[in-house]
Image (cartoon, rainbow, N blue to C red; front, side, top):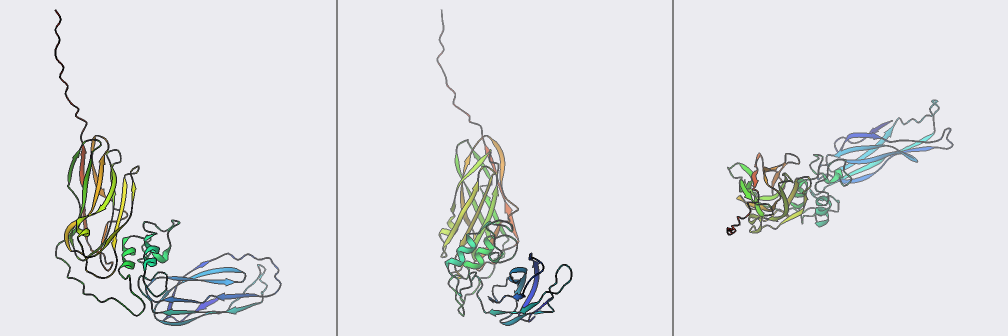
Amino acid sequence: MRLFQTPTIISQRAAVIGRLVVQWPVAGSYSSTAASETVPVQPPRAYSLPLTIAPARLARLTFMPLAVGSSDLGLENVTLTTPLGVNIPQVSMGGVVEVRAGLIGDVDDDCDVDIRDIMLVAGRWGSHSGDANYEPRYDLDGDGDIDITDVMTVVAHWGESCGQGVARVAPEPLSAAVSMNLLPAQNVAQPGDVFPLDVQVQGVTDLGGVEFTLQFDPALVHVESVDLGDMLKQSARTFSMVEPAINNDLGVARVAIYSVGATPVGPSGTGTVAVLSMRAVAPGSGRVEFAAQPPAQITDSLGALQEPLSLNGADVTVAGAGGRRVYLPAVLKR
């Protein structure tokens, strides 16, 4: 059996073989069918269609739309046989793939980018390939996880509809290197103290979204809460935070901050994007670091990464409880 399509409209990527279970011998005929589908040419992602031999699925075909147009899906030289090589009568039927103009960020394919598109992606933030909550169609950059880059790809086009884009002039990038830092770099506290730890970005241009994961010794400190920093609160853009994933048993806190729409332009330069409330747990010393995986990321308001990004953690010392000296009067016996 051979499947053919219009190569200028769609490109076949893979075929996953299914399982066909029937009883032999078979009375009557079977039909082999390639399904029909309508998909957008944007955003550029892979789609899949079932290839069935009724009543079972034989395979699932994955293809990439290349251009607006229509492509027939045809089946040629279809042969079904029993395990003994006896031919089985069958009728072949093809399908059609219609590739239409689409919108980047329109993940539900309804010709506009709205809050539902944002939540379909943001609701799966932090999931990886193989997780129950992960779906490839929402992994817009196809890197195997749904992170702030995917969220910002959608929110940057919020409010757009088919045939209507948002015109804007991108600001010139700053010449300074881009970095993310924990400040102050040196922290000293007593057990039970709650102290702030700022997440500062430096050298950013048109800030649209931020994501980072912190690692720390849970026997030394805990993360109590995370708030937006002044750089975002004072911006003309409106920033929101995905519910932080804080695990003080493992010593991990993951934070994602995003903004909606292509305009207005986001803040640039240096400033605090988040403030963590840290609680000192027990005496000792250690560091709060940015985790290598998932990586810290900064995007502009259109979802483009600002790279390269340097990361700088902070030292924390929790001093022992010093206690008070108590002076008692001396009593002399005669």
